[in-house]
Amino acid sequence: MREQWGSRTGFIVATIGAAVGLGNIWRFAYIAGENGGAAFLLVYTVFVVLIGLPLVIAELAIGRRSSGDAVAAFESGQRNALWRYAGWIGVVGAALILSYYAVIAGWAFKYFAGAATGDLWRAAHGGFGGYFDGFIASTFEPVFWQLLMLAATALVVARGVKGGIERINLWLMPVLALIVIGLAVFALSLPGSAKGVSFLFSPDWSALTRPSVYLNALGQAFFSLGVGMAVFVTYGSYLGRDIRLPGAAVTIAAGDTLFAMVAGLAIFPAVFALGGDPAAGPRLAFITFPQVLLQMPGGTWIGMIFFLLLTAAALTSMISLLEVPVAVAVERLGLSRGRAALVISAMVFLLGVPSALSYGVLTEWKLAGQPILDAVDHAISNFVLPVCGLAIAIYAGWRLAPSDSMAAADLLGSRLGPLWLWLLRLGVPLTIAVILLRSLKVL
Ligand code: PHE
Image (cartoon, rainbow, N blue to C red; front, side, top):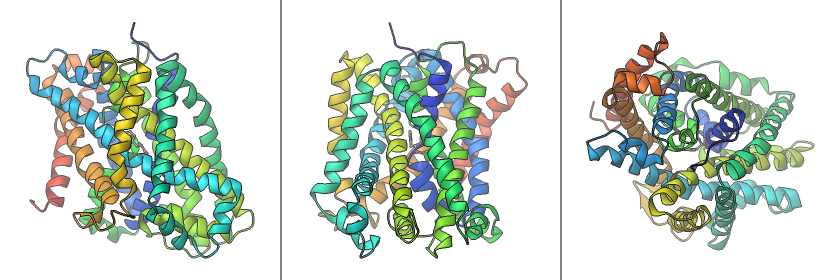
């Protein structure tokens, strides 16, 4: 018998665990910081509601409808074999995201371990810039921590949907929520923190005239929710009929967005209180923020807890990404779960080594003028995820019969059903297409 979630709460918490990750803390802070803070947040939130939410419902519905892996979800009831490629792109994409995601998760883990032993603060007394650059430039270290994170992920996935994935999320997610709230309360109590709050919540409207803000907000909405990578298709496939998907999807999207905002309230007030630069890019969480912490009383404790949060949040997302190809290997190739988790995480590890080395031995190798890791992250978030989202919208909106997809989404007979359908049919594809074409300078 195919596995199922043990409880509705378990499913919701695991799905929020997939959504909440590096995207909400590391990536949200740096993208919001670079794109004008509050104005970005506004565009981002609109995209989450109008594009992300309908897609989360669609992914869960497609997955539950077929009760198979991500490829099967796009095959069931289709004569057109081309659609199965949409599933395969999701599967390969999930592996690709996981490959570099594991590298950044490894950085977080290394920082946590260093903060716990105190080595981090001693080694970085000359400045976190030098410390971080030295670390990511070395050959062995980033690969080592990347491997550890992948091994932990594989161990959980090997134990199954209920016994592994659901269990660890039920443990970790409440702790993470408490930690992030605690960190925000602390940051808000710092003198001078108000500047950080207004950076995040009082918009500088001129930022809205920059087209790149829209592309970055779209990419961030996809990345942070985790849509477009068949994760929700796969998690949805372990669901029974006793849960109503629209309500679940609202909880997931709201939980994810709230988490990012609270994490922003933990980071920006601290950065502003001590005069750091909010637009420091991917280095914000690893250089600017710890540098700030080092200057405040009790900061080293806060740092340890922050990097624990980052590591654990990354782990629950990595688990969801690994589950996508593992489900395919189990169901299509007949591998045991344990073996599938081992083989695929090993492959993902090899795939990620160039990202891990992209600031070290491979620093001369640039893709589109950027280090390998940055280029892969940008390409995936801003292009691959939106294009996959487009495919999902078309599949659920046009390819399936309207009554079929609305029934699968528990929206048949609801007044929101047609709204959801037309968002998928027109709103989502047009918005994505316009933003992508604009950024490719076609429009
Ligand atoms: N949503 C996760 C995060 O914010 C990353 C992720 C992307 C997970 C795509 C699943 C699919 O960190």
